[in-house]
Amino acid sequence: NEVRQYVNDLPQRLTFPLQNGVVRMRLGNPLPIPDVGYVRGGYRCDTCCISNIQVAYQAMLYDDMDKAGVRSAVHFRNLANRVGFDMCVACAVYFYRDAVLRLSQFLGDHSRTFRVCPDADVQLHSFSTEGNVVKFTVSILPWGARPIVWIADKEEYNPPAAWRSAVKIESCNQYDPSRRNGGSDDDQCAICLQLLANGTPVLETPCKHCFHVDCVQEMRSMMDDECPFCRRENVFTSCVNLTGQLNMYKVQVDLPNEAKEIVLAVGSLLTSDGEYNNPTNIAACRSILVRHSCIMDFEAEGERNSPVS
Image 1: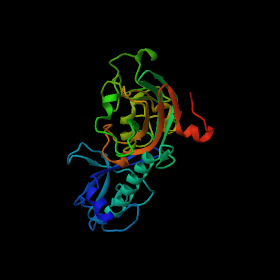
Image 2: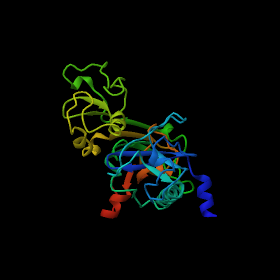
Image 3: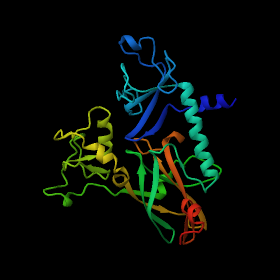
Image 4: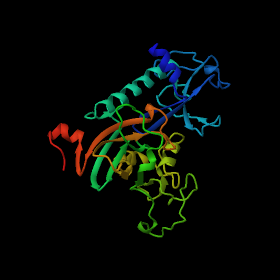
């Protein structure tokens, strides 16, 4: 009965964190089989290694919620005849169930902090309150993730659909043309050809070229580690090592006026559109107790056994 429940609830899209980015997968039923000899009989699950699967999840380079999504050709393993990353339904059920239990147990015990893997994390750098407004700075891992913040509820582990209504999020790495010699508001990302100053995080390479962080993540799935503008090699590896600094945000949360004590959940959100769809979308999460003007970080409490004031 439990397996049947998770199969019935299984979403069409799943997300998983990696060191250098995010794997976003979509269910194919049936899978599109290309005219290639070694996959005509079906694909191979890259997690349990069973062969000839016809219904599975496939890693997508991008997915615009219709059938126009493009299958990712990224090589997750150094194997011959690799055309992407695939996961059978049985493995998807296992990982989806694991994500549901992890998030629900985390919110049931507010002293816990969880990370799906070492490549995912949520790090608090500053925290303050002004009346019913909470302000903090947070860095998010992995590369390409963004923050999600909501008031935790023990009765419901999913963030509310309207979580954004009380939250303002601003990237600390937006494009500022005044900081660049000859920069202007009309400067464009060389990957998407859209304005750099559009409010989204921007990365500056060692060769002094700027790109949207999301554009860099998609590009790295298609080409080698080189600057899209000048073709200098090995420019993004060093940037990924600084992900915590590059992926930093200022967050402001408006608390309910009647709240005397609330628990904020701060998570690492993996979806490309910044929307929450299911528990696999959250790669890491930590909780913060806000009591009047006193703030208690549960992780810090575990280390110091005293609240932060």
